[in-house]
Amino acid sequence: MSKTHKIAVLAGDGIGPEVVREGLRVLHAASEKYGFSCALTDLPYGTDHWLATGGEDGGEIFPDEAFVRTQEHDALLLGAIGDPRAPIGLIERGVIGKLRWEGGLYINLRPIQLYDERWCPLKDKKPADVDMVIVRENTEDAYVFPPVFEDKGGPNEVASQPMKYTRAGTERVIRYAFELAMTRPRRQLTLIDKANAVRAQDIYTRVFEEVSKDYPDVKTDHAYIDAACMWMVKNPEWFDVAVTTNLFGDIITDLGAMVQGGMGVAASGNINPGHFSLFEPIHGSMPKATGKNTANPVATINAVAMMLEHLGEREASIAVETAVRELLCSDQIEGLKAGVHSTTEWGDMVLDRLGF
Image: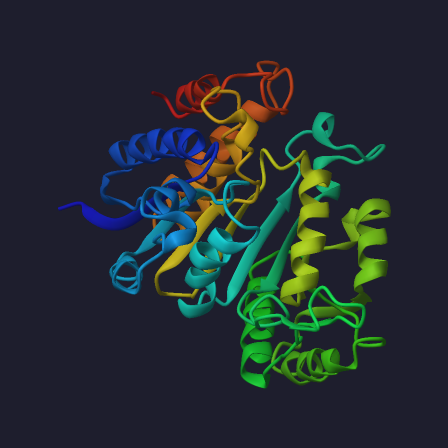
């Protein structure tokens, strides 16, 4: 009897429904080919739902009851969240933030891999030079805590938002990164922080050193975030696995996405190892492109591959990743930017590579 995976689907805002549509086409094809099934639950949450239920007069963002039911699934596939019709950050924090922080998805995993040198904006860099994974802490740091405004709008206004780190949160993300480094041929792990200026991040420095003693086979390195961004552009081949804080991880992984070819191909996992986890493309919702069938869904398809790996469907995961790799290395592809190929065309080409 084939295994059934319970997957929640939150297509979200803007181009989210369009890229998720293609991701689900690939997921269904993979399940048919590799002998498992998926029980899907559609979640309506996003800006349209918030507006339809009252908007600023009490619109629904992500009710606690629905949140609890969502966590009873094995995984969630997310399209995109964000729309200028809602206050900045309201829907993002209420949906993605809630899932990450209240759901305990403490790992944000961002593979950065160049498929073909044509897509890299850096001179003379080849796929072998861009093959890394960034492990970003996902439940602490400034993002998690509410801002405080004193004398808001006044001449003496002060705004603050704390950067807090716990030993437990720091150790578990660092230990995860060491375990991941052990699975890769180079066995190299770089800590990225700014402990020379943000002294609270000394906790990362100390815990990294302590945990490293349990992994003598892993070569360790250290870089401050500003230097790491510089090296990402100048020498991306220096990186194998890197671990960093929530805020700095958000910054450097977007830089890495551009090095690998752009937001249209970059995916991420929000992971609680062995438990419910969330997978998504890292791009935004692109409201101006809504409904035009021009968005590149490859990042969502890569997110599906990551989700399949998390679900234990390794053969299917490898097949989807291989299909994307072969496609992006082929002469079929004229470019990765939105509109060069239609959203549907991208899905068709990946399915063709999968044998459908």
